[in-house]
Image (cartoon, rainbow, N blue to C red):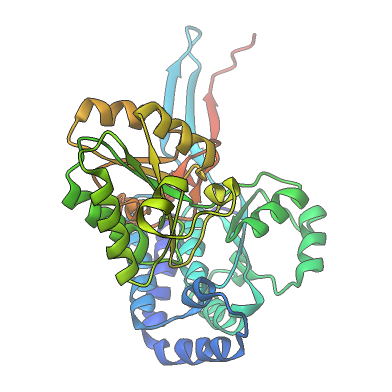
Length: 398
């Protein structure tokens, strides 16, 4: 591991990087245009994540500025204890060392995830997808310029331009030390990484998020939350894929038809369970397996449920462990739902689209973990650390 950089150096590199992104706006978009031109896949969500426009660059710059202004996550005292023999014992946060980030199609990850890992005192290895190669190489060249401008070795940020076989070989037998791997992308990437990795992996899991419309829901709120969750951005893991409507809701059939009509007006393909399909003449899901799917598309499944317990059980069975929301005016029912649904983020009367480091006040995130170790949900700066024990004595022996 490289020697820890001072917080002043780390912040100076981040601030310089923000300036370089602003200066190189045109060239970044030009490199990205090359990637978009070369992209021949038909994946709408992938293409949306691949695009770098002015708004995306604004987001990258803002994330770096926010990171530079945040407290150093390294060296924070988590616990202290004075032994009866006089030993002073502290537990402090510490950098992991080297973090490998494997990701698909999102050049902004090269800035935002790289920035969070760097601010946390870590060396960064970036393994981006072939579809975003030109954008990534351009952004990494700016990282290197920022490091050099601050008299810091360019080894701190390294881009691994590997194909699938080379990546697999590196995961199984790294040619340099790797302390933590963070895959960001679809399920196939995550499964591939977990299968071959020889060090700890943080799973940035799939979405497949649910909204449960309870019998005491405000229906205007329910409509607004569902439309926002499904249509505001289909290419993100916090988008909505499934809706459960409580049959104890007065005139639930009318509400179901209303929401289906509103979604169809917005070009969303609506699928139903057996009851909804018959009620609203929408296609019925082909099999139970559809309940497990994350769509990343203008597509949604609507089904009925007969009780709160059934809603909780359904979500716990099928969801990706990411986010779930209940729409209800009954706070005690909401609390019971939120305590028993096994997802990283649980909501009452709000859109799942808020599951995001920036929205949660973390100033951005490295990933959204659906694992329970070592951190769940958005992984911000303060979570991207391990810990270390410091013991100060004057000759004590046991």
